[in-house]
Amino acid sequence: MSTILVIEDSEGQRAEVRADLQLKRVRAQRDLLEQNEELKRLARTDALTGLANRRKLDERLLAEFRRSARFGTPFAIAMADIDRFKSVNDEYGHLVGGVIISGGAGRGGAMKEIVCETDCAGRYGGEEFLAILGNNGEYGGRAFAERWRSASRESRFEWIPGKPSRHRSASACGSRPLSRQIIRAQSSLCPSCRGG
Image (cartoon, rainbow, N blue to C red; front, side, top):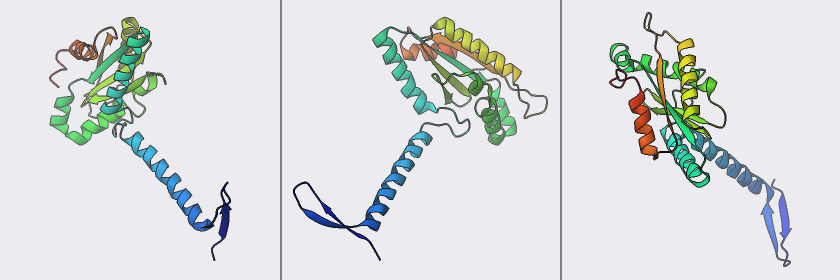
């Protein structure tokens, strides 16, 4: 048996409402909002690493660039890739490559350990990773890149016996247009790494 509620508005109009149906509707709306929030999170998270994906990185880069232009504060980016990753994928397959990417950069990896909550780090594409460092100039970006490189070397992982994987990193400051910053960071990576 349903409970019928009689509701009266400010003008004296009355309406009868079944409480059980109203409660179901409220619960369904709450569940829908929670599911939408989860979908938003998933749409901006890299599945292998748990870090930001390219979409979130692009959004954050644009926001940092606009903030920098408006307030005159610098920001830095740091970029890294996994050495000889293409040859690992070619020789051992994408499953091993995925394990290396998720272990080396994301879940418990060096990048996740050293990035501040206020900064944003993620997988830029393939085996390339990007950190966006708000309120940091080129010096801060280079210092971060060096900490990242050191942490990566200390946490080397050997998923393939005798073949440790390492990161190389580079940084660029925020006083240039975004596209030039990314190009500069990519070109600063070890030349032999750019081919894979």
